[in-house]
Image (cartoon, rainbow, N blue to C red; front, side, top):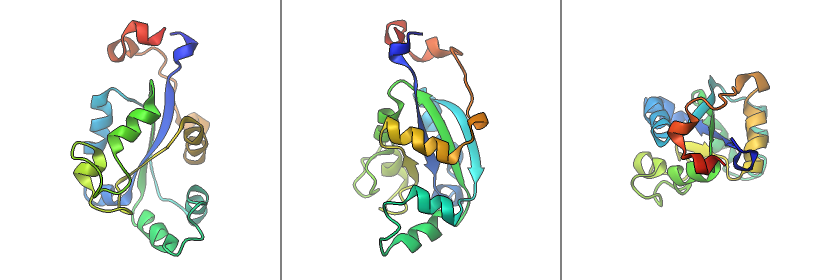
Length: 160
């Protein structure tokens, strides 16, 4: 594969309302059916410190304690997904943050009617994805799959 078309990686968090509703497998299946590769996955309970770091831009907001409590209601499932333009693809699959604004067919459009309980977190750009992946995964928790089945996902000219 040509390095010009390097596969991107992004973070997705399946939030507690997905865990409580028993929809983890359904959401993961949507990413796999799209052709995105899971190269890291774990269930974890989020600490106060990790949430304060991840939501640093919201810590001073009056609703942050509600957000923190909802994100700690159950463990979350952290995914590292890989693919060409994966950040853009995942954001499109997730839909707008507010589930009431999300179109049917998107994850939020199909599983959320809330702004805060919006079922998934998805990194918003490649640079942020790298920071977030380092926050949620140790280096040895993300795997290199190389060219494994890559030609079943992309046309050869997309990889050159």
